[in-house]
Image 1 (cartoon, rainbow, N blue to C red):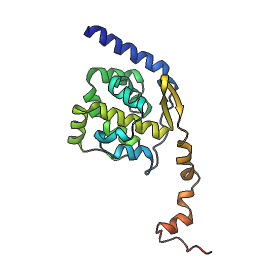
Image 2 (spheres, rainbow, N blue to C red):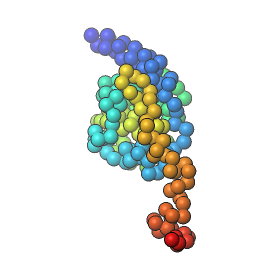
Image 3 (tube, rainbow, N blue to C red):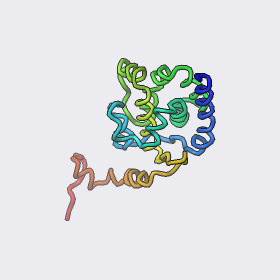
Length: 187
């Protein structure tokens, strides 16, 4: 029975690649400091229920190797989904511990203390994978929808438009938030 379960997991890893990973765009640049992805990563992985979508939660708990391999490839930690899947199959806690801080940095968050990193990676790997998955979705503006379809997050463009257009660094914002070099606003 264990052998059947193992082969089923490997079959899902292959199927997941063709249904999802091939269509999911890679992270091209680190998200802004005050983005949703950073907010998700700065919280404890144990408190992530309020952030994680149902598909990411399901994949993190039941198909953890495939979901972790996708995150490792799309953040640029590994050049191939298959390498990430192999590393996750061999020893998921070791793969998480090794890549955790690099993934966090790529997604715009601070690094984690090595002891805390080891504790989360060994004792709560599903929570770490779910947290990384949700942060990656937020950073790329994509999301996994039902039936394993990759979709666009309709709110992602609204969140980043202001920063891309330079509205957050305008003289009005600088004056409001205390930039010493900003000139007073005349009405």
